[in-house]
Length: 463
Image (tube, rainbow, N blue to C red; front, side, top):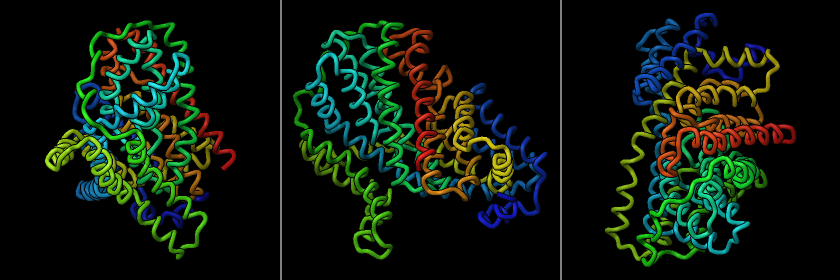
């Protein structure tokens, strides 16, 4: 695609970069901005929200753009991302808190694990991790799963690694590949991907990826690291409390997924003005789907656990403070993305890629991997890579835009190490050394990332 044709396809970007800034100045500006973000997060432990804000200013200043224009670009991207993604994060947090407080998550775990033999237990734990991970943020799901992992390991006599790695693989795959998690949602928004299509393809990629990085990899990891489950969590506080049934809980968890997939199917099979499509387009919109899920959860999860009005209100209220930082990081990532777009960095990268012959999906994965390794944050890796690669998506088919989102998501979970909070959570909960954590958790994340990329590339050959 020639630059002129690219400008026709992406007029906003063409206008934003007029007069054109030389690539010799834009590329160092982008690299320096990313380097500043990485240095502030890793060396000086500055919060990613501040780091992304400062990095945006650095990009504009080095590129020679007026700082007032840089501020305008940043605030525009910040506001747009907070409006489109921030509300979804808040609704997802509310649903996740209802799932935890009602005991619905425990019901899913007990039902699936209780029907599994010692041989199929790792596969059951992978399924538990995936289901729990579908509506929850990674850190929340991790904290929720730990007592379950320890209890199952003690009762089954299996190593905590053989039981835990499959569950963490399911949790991490949902976090990196499947909306409504913050990372995939930001990438979908930045690349203008079809959410329902991305969700469907994400599940297709996640299922075999979890199988390989979870139960299959756990066979080897369990030999390298053999750790007994600690005696804690032998009994669970809410074991005797009333809680919703397995069927009701599963219905609530899958409600937003079904609505979003229904929208995607209707968009393909029904005419634009067909009544069925009009309805599904509305209820399948992410905001409405998650809002419906929260309302459904209040009746199915809350009432199933005999939670009163005050208890429901308290649960929903307590869900929001923990995700304030996530929303700020995601919104700041949107601001940084908009700065890259308005200065013309994205156009330079797009032009270079189109002339290089390098697979766009592979490039997306590599960019996300580098940022993930440097910052330790899957979310920062996703939002930054999405901003850099956004111009490439404008001329791509919808299915390939969705695969671009998944390639970035796969790269964002590559090799968790000492600069990742998840690394230390797993280390401390499992009672591992740094070396043991690398041989189990870090390698699992790497297998997950590479396997996810392989399946994304394979899908790219057939869609």
